[in-house]
Image (cartoon, rainbow, N blue to C red; front, side):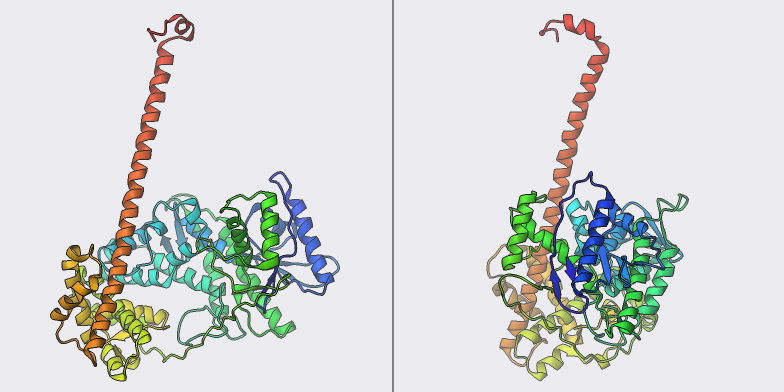
Length: 562
């Protein structure tokens, strides 16, 4: 498959069916022949993107490329072809290595156990600080989940980093002294944004996010060069005293970073392309093509050659298949360049929003927090931070879905320039420093009301959760508990409270399903272990009997004696 760098187009140009016994030289010959044919039709090939399979790594070695010189040329054409490993595969490889080993990073060690600790601390509150993270992300990860890019990206996300920063500040004794898990999460999140950017320019210049295109003066250059130095000094170890190991994904990131930086420079100088959206430099379209072909034949994991050919032909003619939600990658926003039937595709527009600059930095927030933490109990801290964050979410949803007057808007949220520090605002303030996209700061009266609603909800939900139209029962109870909360009309007040009930019940049901699923999984594992234990005991008894009775004597024993 080929994909345009500066256009939202993709095109399947051929396929080859190879067996495991075919050597890698055949793959290399096919690839070089394909590149030559593309040059012959006046298409300029600038990058070769693949995963880190043995054959692909063999191609890198065959052309004598190095991390600092990650390109090659085909005979007869003076064009550099940059070698890029698929960034989502590299991120999953880092995650998979972290399961069983410590990651020596930036002067300390990043550990998977620290991520599990953050998750367990978040679960202590009915409202989690990291609600998207589940047992599926951290425990008993199946082979299918190991292939999912979204699960790995959510583990190494700004929300996880913020939660880590909050919990280490509350009680650093819960974490190792040489812990650099937070630094690793922050750097990997920004690295993945840099290599997976889709925006043309940053939403807000003051933010540290790098999910926009690489240009001549963008912040990517300094950050990516620093990441090369950090990855060069990093390694995986079983424990502090064991030997260091450098899996291919670490060098793969170095090669990919150098290729992206050199490619962006060449495109800018020689082809007058000022920006490079790195989202175009991965193999998501190919992964999604395979996923669509598999689902056309009963979700066959390993389709036969005939099924593959039939599925590919169907996609090429009609492009009517819809990508499954369970696929490993996000849906790529590319259109097939040439197909036999012309079906119009929806145009995707990315709105560019204007936000005010942040006035609080992370160091000033942490200094204020250390001064005010003494008056807040640690057991109440997580819940109050989660409630305040949800208050802003509630206000944002309500304002968006209702024709809210200016009076109600001022009643529910604070202007961004008037935000002040309170200990229950720590999580929201830290999230705001990383990403201001859509965050709202709720008023004090809204925070106090939602805090009271949450306490009331926890006390009565067991009696009402099984009923239909639960809002009819909960609404009057919540109104009685917070008589001071009043919007411009009684109808608006009831609508806001019903919005809280709807969202809260949704999360309650979601958390209960997770708990039930986790308990069911544990029960199945216990039953499986019990069956395996019985099976092992039977084999052990049979082996003992064979040892006690010699084979010659066993033949002469009657069946009844046996």
